[in-house]
Image 1: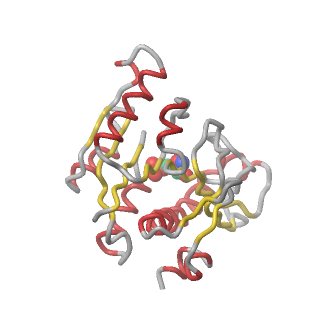
Image 2: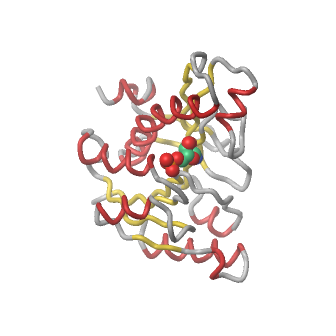
Image 3: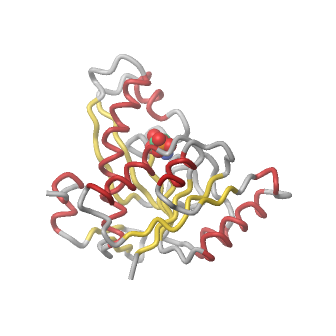
Length: 218
Ligand code: GRF
């Protein structure tokens, strides 16, 4: 049986593309079916990645709904209709606030953030880290809850940004790592390796996986 992953994206979708390519060429995600791309932006470049790979697209534009709750509920209906097992946010620029959606998909919605959380939450994480003079920043893959970039951490990876000359260079350096880490973590989920303890503590069951995505891919 396939493990169904829905992607929520608002923009270019390079992490989404990295996952699709990891499944095609990377020897991981064998069991994964990308069951749909949900986007809040009718012109998101991520849509063409989905179309090129025959992945169903659902455009749910906030302006078509009376309020945030109604929009989140439409997302929930779409995810349930798709029968998805995991929701991966990949550059989705809205905060999910619906308790219903967060509850129905508790511990099944994940996000990637380009900093070592709790440092530098928000939408300018790489620039903020660079401007603060950080030599090392990185990425965090975490569960989504009602907070801004605050849910339980699943995986973190440091990235050396000491040679970067701008926030954009730091973003590019981190993004290269994101493209390896995010598919690998989704692969862990698809293989049932991610467990959440009672206190929200996340453990990765497999010894190889625990050492990090690069090693887990052999
Ligand atoms: C990435 O930097 C990711 O960490 C953040 O949003 C950006 C999305 O990029 N959540 P892309 O749309 O996947 O290219």
